[in-house]
Image 1: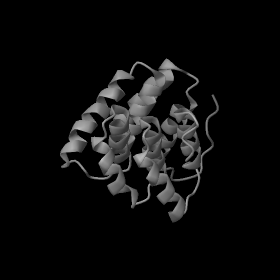
Image 2 (image 1 turned 60 degrees about the horizontal axis):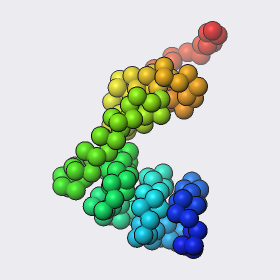
Image 3 (image 1 turned 60 degrees about the vertical axis):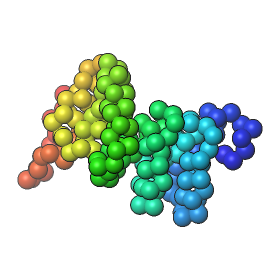
Image 4 (image 1 turned 135 degrees about the horizontal axis):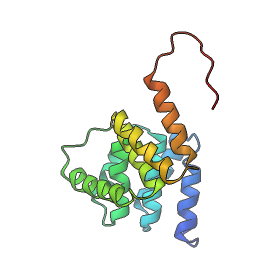
Length: 171
């Protein structure tokens, strides 16, 4: 990852794969050091990785990304704070970055993956009704969108209480 002779996309992909694992404090520090990388693609992927890891020490580091010079990094930082339920709504840089994030979500709303991302956003905001609507729309657009199907099933499951064991009805 540190070798800048590799293309940015290769380094960003390596960071993405690295952040999908359980990391210790030392590895987390190395990962956060890439927030200063010259490549916006790498910085954006680090923020996405920190979102998956959700370590408390990363909050302050990601806050600085809200004012990054590149839009994709600011959007990744706004997404981080939306998806990890960190209350930074009073920070001015979050307000403007969050507008960019919400605009990006809406720009992709015609696509199944865009609806899936909107569903994730609503679910993170505890708006289950809107999340269900977005996941259903994602499946309408692409009936093979299994991530949306699974999230929809898990969301429905979390909303019901089964008092006694029942046999599921086969369709």
